[in-house]
Length: 443
Image 1: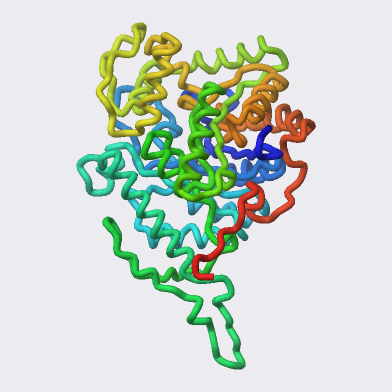
Image 2 (image 1 turned 180 degrees about the vertical axis):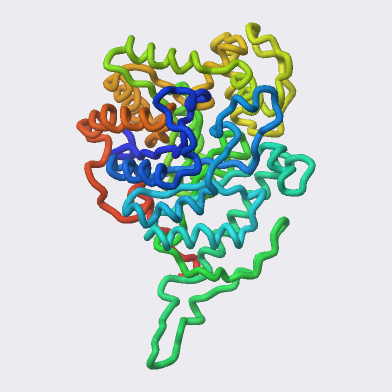
């Protein structure tokens, strides 16, 4: 029996879609990465479909140098709006759906991060979420004055203190601190305003924050690390954990282990929501779904497939033979968990390099289901009831078609089974996710 009554559900916002060749699909729009009205329509459709949140992934570079770069449409070179700017613009265009965005701890100051997400939480009426990332590409480092990316373990130590400072800043104003009593002339209660005076290994920040306590108390924290340090960070700070899982047994073990780690940090394991990524191709029959998937796979340019695979593995694969198994690779300073996932998929499924990049083309190693709406709903139900997921982050392979199919064909089946909400009953993202509003440590 699951400890939640219903699934949580997030939607990855994407211009053309999450598939490597999405932009080449005849039904995919071109140029929408920088079209606000396009994203407004997606967010409003997600709200009509009663998603918990929409989510924006992000990185801080354009990978314009590898062979075939000119064949990679913006999904891969990361040509996107800055997330907090876009989410702030979407806030008044929506009323319920949560708004999650990515910000790197490696390349942002804690005070600026705290201020930005507290502001978004106020602007949206309590729907903000911060996806905490450490950044992994050396190309990002070179855009911020470094020759190479920081060591993996150091990035996570840096991130842990960064988040600690941000949380202190969010708590620097207590609820009810603003009095604004015109008769007495008292603007705020000084006993409810606190300088944080943080003096740590990486940061020295006095505070307090110049934004009052936000509607959620603290915006929701998301983390997606699955390596050892990544899991430790997630277990210690995350309200929501994104993860790439393809096997129901491994996913259940991951979720169980992460919640045990959370308990070891003194947290209630139920206060953490684990969302594996899922991508789908839906047909009226299994054969139709397979044909739709194949037509999309046939659009993958080998140079692009190899370049994307190299990004996941942390380096240029050079002149590797596409029709032979993946060669032995040196350890990477990029994403450790994704590096290990890709190697495991190649090994367990005995794939050639060409088969491997095709296998990863849909959503970079997340759960992929190709079939009828009923089959997809059955798989999601099985994962949820087995304790392998608290819900899912949907990665639409082709926009907007995949969203329309998923929202109109799969979600009604899950709703009939009582596994998804039929209406919003709260106003904040924490309400949607069943997460308590954090109490001020000063209260």
